[in-house]
Each structure stands twice: as C-alpha cells, then as structure tokens.
Length: 218
Length: 394
Image (cartoon, rainbow over all chains, first blue to last red):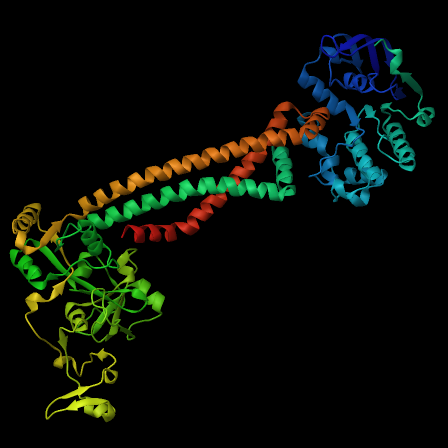
C-alpha cells in the first residue's frame, strides 16, 4: 500500500530534516508510529498524506507516486483515498455533527459527485455511538464524542488509508481505549490501512507493527 | 459552489452577532448614499415638474424663492399680499390663463386653506373623486390626503382656524361644507382645502352676513341693544356658518380691488404675451410686483442644493471607505482566528481557491443581505425623507 524510498525532507535550509531510506506498509496493516516529541512523527504523517512534499525520494501510496503529483491531484487523491483524524479533533463549531461528518463531501468536488445518503451517515454515526447527536453542535459534546465525530468524518468516504495523529492524546484513559477500539474496528471493517501516531505505549500491543521515528535519520 | 454557500451560510448564522454588526454597517453605508441619491433625485424631479407646469407667477416683490415655493406648494407660508386689482389688470391684458391664489388661512392640523377660482382645477388637471365643485361661498373641495387624514367626506364640515399667518387675532372662523373630494394627484394639492376667494375674504373679515341672534341666543350675552342693531359677546357667535338660507346676506365692505391675494399664476398664450406683461410689471417700480418663471427659480434653488449634495457625497464616500477599512480589518482578524479551520479544511481536501471561495461567499451573503436591507430601508423611508427635504426646502 505504501512504499517510501530514499525520502528526504527538510524544513528550510538549516532546519529539521528527516530521511527515510526504505519503508513499506501493506494493505490493511495497522501501524503505530512512535517517537519523542519533535522527532518528526507528524511530519512523516503529512508526507504520507501528501500535505508536505519531500525534497527528494519517492512516496508511493497505492499506485500513485505522491512526489510526482501536483498540489490539486494530491489534494484530490488525499480526499478520496485517505481519512485523517487529528489530536484536537478540528471540528467546525458552526456546523452540526451531521454536517461535520459530511464535510469531505461538501468541500471537494472529486468526492462530492459520489452520493452520501442520510441512511449511510446515520448508520455510520450509530456504529460509533453518536447516532442520537447528529443535530448537535460540537461544543455540546464531550471530548470522547467529539473525537468520534472526527473519526466518522475520516471514515465517511470509506478511505483506503486512515491516518490518525495522536487521536487519543486529549482523552481520558477510558475513552482512549474506546476510541482506539473504534478506529481499529472501523479500519478492519473497511479493510483500510491504519497508521496512528501515538505517545501511548499501552496501546502499541494492539497494532500489527510499530515504527519508531527516531530510527529514521534526522 | 452550492456547498460553499451552504457552509458560508452556516457560519453566518452561527456567528449571528458578528454577522448582524457587519450587515448593519454595510447596510448603513449603502443606505445613506442610496436613500440620499433617491430622495434628492426625486425632489429634483418633483420640484422641476411642478415648476414646469407653472409657467409664471406674479406676486409681491421680495424673495423670488418664497413667492415661487408659495405658488407651487400651497402649504408654504404666504409672502406679502398683493391687491386683487393686479389680477384684474392681468385678465384685462389677456396674456393667457390667469389664476388668482389667496392662501392666508389654515384649518385644523395646519392644513392650508386656499382661496382660488375653479379654473385652478383645470389648470392643475385636478379631478373630483366624489361630490361636486364648490358652487357658492361657504363651500369647499378637499384634497385626498385631507380627506384621509381628517376622516371626512362629502357633506361634512371643516372649520377655518381663527387668525391667520399674519394676524393671530384674526376674524371669526368660518364653517365650510365639503362638496367634493379630489382624486389623488401626488402633489401638494392633495393636502390642501380649496374654497372660493370670497369665502377666504369672509374669513379675513372683509365680508360678512347678518344673523337673527335674538331668536337663537341667550339674551344675557347681549352687550348693547339699539333699535335696529345689537352688540353681543363673541361667545354668541363662535363661528360663522354660511348656509343656503343666509348666503344672500353675505356682503363685502370696501373696494374689492384692494382685497388681498398672495399670488397670481399665469399660463401665457404665448411667450410674447408673457414678455409684454413682464416688462409692464417690471417697468413700474411703484407696482411693488415681481413676475418670476418658476422653472428658472427652481433651477437656481436646485443649484444651491447641489452644493449641499456635494458635501453629502463626500460624507457618503467617507462612510463607504470607513466601512471598507472595517471589512478589511475584520477579514484580517478573521483569517488569523480561523487559521486552524482553514488548515483543517486544506488537509481534508479543500483547495486554497475553495477556501477563498468560502470567505468570498460569506462576504457575498453579507453584502446581499445588506443590499436587501438597505433597499428595504430606502423603500420604507424615501417618501418620508422626501417630504422632510421638501419641507426643509420650503
């Protein structure tokens, strides 16, 4: 699913740099990315998502070489093939839960042509336990519920690759486990590849593999 | 684009206070120049059209603006009076259609009471909506606005106010019968009460009738009795009502040539007749008269107003510029505050152009709502503002 070769990334001329000589992630694999703060975990995730471009080397996702695609193609590819979950949830306060979930369909033409019927949306929301909160605003939800909405938003277009940046970083221990269960279950159901950046050592056992970013050359 | 509009609308509705303030600011900065321009344009059209329909006005020497506005808009305070002899002189000269106006009294609510000849209605192309034209002293015809405002109709009575603009003590009020109501004309005629010149002179005390007060009143109110006359307290006759029975007793004392008029309108047969009359009037300084062409006078008046309009335009441009700066400031602050939102949108697949489109849609909605609000405010207030401006000009 993902192949990285001789990928070099650098912030500015003198800034932080990251070199990944070779790395591969299989389709449907559940991968955890760990490493100390500032080691480049989020940067690596951004590179895989095509949000950042490497200075040299290649990143292939499926049959696409992201480093060869233009900004628009990468964006379209990202919005159609990938789902992103953020540590701070990043929900839009002015939209209802339902609108937040369908947001990818509202903002990108490449997937808005695919229809999203309300039954699918409701079904998905019910699966993650927020079926009765579709008309609420994010500020009316608990932290755990907000992250569930964010996960729904990442899953709504049935992505092949699910990228989560510290999805449990702002949650209490009970919610951490529930959210991680949810992510793993949903990725399993969709046969999606899951890459999760986490600090939480207790969660690592639930992944197929763990990569420590500090092993990359920095 | 539909989705962006939807998102923009949700944002605006969620931030109601901020959006309302923006809408209010933009609306006001649209409303003021829009309403200002509409009102001034309407006022100009109204003044010019009324002026064009009144070729010449003859009146007492003094302010040409006061005389013209009085003759065009009957609710304007009267200038110095001229003698009825002027009207006779003009008619004898036969320069065209000559119409006497004597507007020196009001009825309740300050509505103007105008003494005129019936030819005035033909000249102004005024038609009756109901009733008939006045046929004798003590009758009157009222404008549509008067009927509406006072809730009166044909057969009802209106009472002239005691006193007049130049003599507060005045004479005894006259109670007049409404014989007709005019169709709305969209001019100041709608707000006037028309009667014949003689009735107006009766109100001035220049003419009167005789009543048999012995039959009708308390003898205690008699101040003095003589063989064939009696002097009574004013409480006996609070007003004069001219009826079919007593109209024959109405008579005037003095020379009618000296009776007052406030203006004479002239619709000349041709320009030559008007020029001849004008030179006759202006070559006789002792006449104390002036003959003005309303179109010219109103043109001069409007050129003065246009100078004020320039100041108003400067004010409007300043307001627009201030609003624009406010919008720029709001946008800059908004971009800072919503940086995370924009980053998230970008990360999950929204292009930079679409993010710009989202902001643009928000401002477009704000602008459209503001435009609607400003148009509604203009529509609602333009008549009132126009009336205020016209009153101020008069």
